[in-house]
Length: 217
Image (cartoon, rainbow, N blue to C red):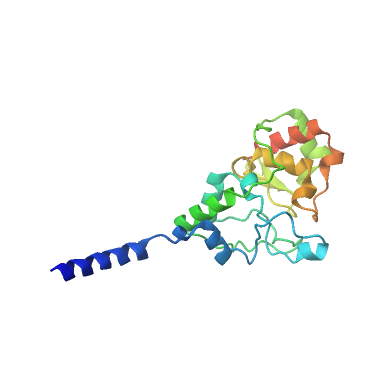
């Protein structure tokens, strides 16, 4: 009877071990196994030339914890929808919408891992989402952001397709990251298509524009 009890206990323990979600290994381990073919997380930025940028299959994620909102990221990893209308690093090829879907457990683990990746360039509590006539004018005319980025106009996508869509930015992006990106884009992407607005827009305009984009549904 004692031998039987031990056998049952071992069997139960093995059952628990095999039923344990894969995220028990840690989000970093899952990321290294599944995601490093397209993304890297060890910053700062590695690419120094156009050729190096074009060789990338997906965006860098070494500052993901400063860029994204946690709830959005966990949800998106389980049901990814294209953020870019066009394929990464392409100006002609449509986004295939083929990003792998993750289980809830793996998504939670990778989210925790990515949200721990911060950039010192992003200071918390600087930008509060807000609309203003000044910001709308900057977005539409002075920058103008709509030449490369989509946003929703009367519920429908409008704008350029060469950059990532800004529709849903209010739920996806950290407002403080938007401002840091505009203020010092070279720290995040030394090689890019997007203009450097640090000199084109003064600090007040950068902050106003950041606050405005952070309201986009």
